[in-house]
Image (cartoon, rainbow, N blue to C red):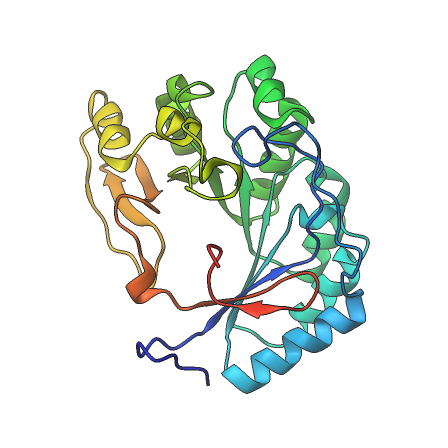
Length: 272
């Protein structure tokens, strides 16, 4: 068990398979260059060994596979099969969905039940301008395949002023129609945005997101686990959505997440 000096017990583990990504999203990288893997990333066996040590030593019972883009990693299949054998209460994947159709047979075979898919717009041309790679149709195909496989699907979207402000409602409608919980993620003040005026120009906060949604829907607060990063809302008769309010309402006090980077570093916060 790991308990920090603030009394937080860490039960959730995020594991980055690779720092590489096949997208170059405008809010993630400044110059359009795709992120590359670290020269000293652990191989699949080494990373799984590190995970097993943390699981056994800290009592972790929930794990999420992330990146970069995890499906881009050559160790994805080996690693997924390994962690699914650990008997954890919950295993999930966060992906941009571009390679999801290719890997769906493996994912279904392992019995994985939970997946988060990033989707910032339903406009195909805008998709390319935001992600600077990939295509919308393939991602949507991956979403439908995940639903057909009986998986619990969530969609993650990062609203930004110049890119997809007009998609806040269309993405919600798309998700509600499929019984998917959409999560709006406030733009994070880090990376190339940290010391740039661009952050303030692009940021759309929780209050504004809710105001836009309330133009169409009646909403009410919904229950969420005490350590959830998402503030959840219900649209009666339609479904649920959430807002990860990194800036408006930081969730540091109840955070229960540890992270292992692709090079084996163990840390507790994305902002470190």
